[in-house]
Length: 226
Image 1: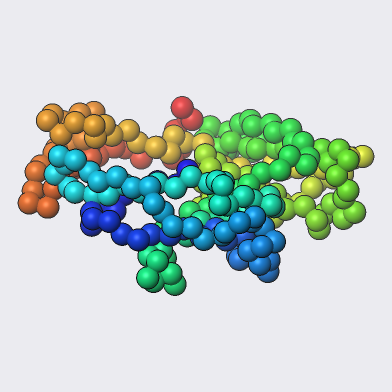
Image 2: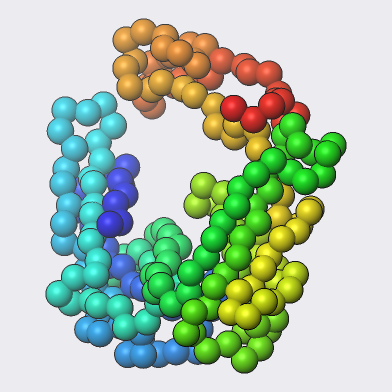
């Protein structure tokens, strides 16, 4: 389900297109008919105008797969939104993954094996059980990615199995699969502009809208994970 707001308001002729990508998020060599059944490019005709808001906007929404677009292949995809009159100029893009459960995996998240890192880092070990999926070259044919809270900006990739046992690929490292474990989000309540809520320092109404100033917080990269 793709949703976004256009702060220019009014009605625009937007369309979205799905693009199949390889493991490194580069467009693959496949043509659209190889990975979708129907159309890979459709107009966004579900939108709603804002009502009684200080900032006028239009809310757009598109849901897929649908009757006009069905996926034929699993893998990495990017959905790109553009104006119908300027399809070569992207308005926004978003990554998503179509999964197909061909193998099983066993994750093991724990405090870092490195003693000096145990208070602020987390280690993600895992095993991949290939079952009946044919694997001729496990060290070359498998690409893995470890995500922290669905983030791709700090994803750990290109890990090779430490060793292979029967139908199991074992990824058990000490340092290569560690994430900073500090609480990465700071809380700020923006639901109401009539008072100064938790996490904010002040709220001011200017000519161009509301300005919310967050309260300063202390750095905590080496604090115990909460």
